[in-house]
Length: 406
Ligand SMILES: *Cc1c(COP(=O)(O)O)cnc(C)c1O
Image 1 (cartoon, rainbow, N blue to C red):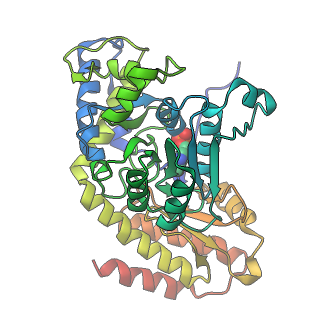
Image 2: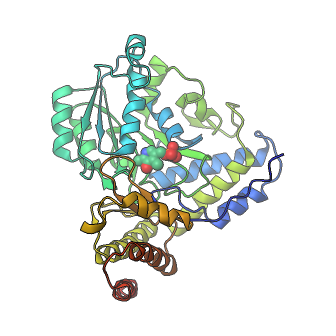
Image 3: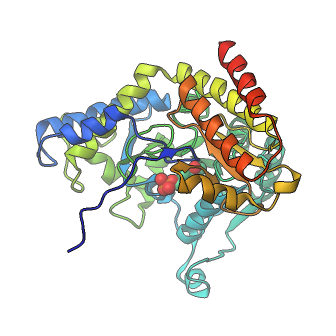
């Protein structure tokens, strides 16, 4: 017999998942043993649906959450794309790269899939690659949509792989000008940036995840929102999935024929534990307030960024939940060694997953002076162990001054 599995507490200071709030864990553990159609479980799902509309800033009825991870929500978001549809996808890092692959799989004909089953390249999907470390900007989007006039366009709002914010307004405006249906991955920005998706009406589809800005447990629910245009298209054309069919999946969230109803229809078996913890995560976010939380991220990210720069690193990211940096000259090339040394001590930072290799230090759910100071201390110690040259006391003094400026 194997021993009971014990998993230690670590400090998740990477791009995600963030450390789950204790209130979310308690909700998970406190939930009673109840089946998926028990009245409080389904009420919890209905309330979560209403809270999600506030989190997204939307009146879209088809706003709910997909059981699974971020890519489960994205799979549901991409499900209306049918083989042969014309798509332009913008890629500037690891995650938009995976999204692009998922889109190419959906848009492939059987012949496209047979030609390269794991990495199909249908001619009807145009991938626009933007170099790692750069943002997708309005000019790039406008010229690609003007040239290709696709049915769909895709972009990640915040590309966590390289830590870059892409131009959501430019994406929306170009989609509107060219009659394109936009799909946006808001996995890394929802619950961190303060925005209303209804301000971007040409974007028909949005998908996020449990474990970044929402700070629910990973593998609970990935928030999604679809506007009426894409729901109408689905009613006309259908799509090739039962599990991730937006109209069918929404029934379990008490959305039937475009209306909120009191009683759900079974779609697949939800977990009362997952519902309870996800519900608590949404309550936490709305209690904190979207605008206040966004301001807190910006403030603490600035403190971390300045401290990391004071240690000689070059920061290339502009997200407010994550700092992506190059090590100073003589340490260049030793990024993975630094990350491995930190992780061995329970300090969970990450390298970039695509070239060039950089270091990623994140602050998900670490929005206190003590937490940011702890992260800076641990990072500084790891750098000093590799013989980096800087004065730790003056780095910490600089951080303290920033934290006092509140
Ligand atoms: C983390 C992330 C994903 C993937 O989320 P999972 O929960 O790992 O499936 C997708 N897109 C972006 C932008 C991300 O940051």
